[in-house]
Amino acid sequence: MQHRPKSERLFEEFCKSRSVEPVALKCNGKKQPDYELFFDGQKVVFEIKQVEANAADRRYNATLKSGKMAAQTRDPDAVAERVRNLIERAADQIKSYHRENADIPAVVVVYDNANNSYTDIYAIQTAMHGWEQVTLSVPSNGQPPTVVDRGFGRRNNKTFRPDKNTHISAVATLHEFWDMATKERQLGLRFYHNCYATNPFNRAWWDDKNISHLILTDKVEGEFQNWKPLTS
Image (cartoon, rainbow, N blue to C red):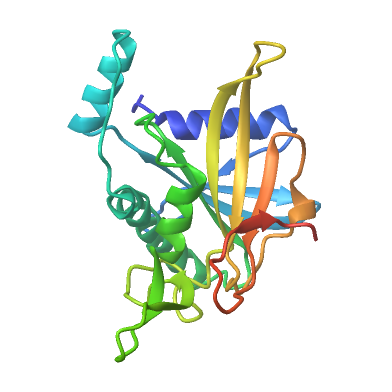
């Protein structure tokens, strides 16, 4: 039997622990998402991806396990690029599926198998919406610069725009962790909703104590956008 990725095994475990049966989709020579799930009769497809450890990740984790202090210098966009590439590959598979199922919500699930913060909130924000920038106005009279705006950069490193990947409803991150109070192993999902989605994922379909739903705040001139809880 072919070895199955840890991310798929954990996702199936998570679903079944909540009495949701994941239906594996067969390729049949076509690009397909991994699973169909049903919520009160509503079909949603899920594509599961995992970040694998590279040499730098392995060195960092080996140092931590040895009990020594570990440090690393990381470019936030380089971190996000690894996640961004997975999302783009998943988007291609989902787009193929949507040629015959255009109205089905679709979620990309990312698991950090490198164990090195690839699914932290800021890494996902940068992967989805690009890096942030501060726009300055520099007076010609020698006065100090003033801030004109704060927000996402205009350069084309965004995975989601009003004209790009609108067929993806959300990116979700899958987490394995231990409850501090009970010391029990837990699994959780954090949904980052795509504000440009043609077929949004309804928060009410899947929600419990280990599932959270976030969406970007609206753009306000002069301010950065951040994640906020999705309440409806």
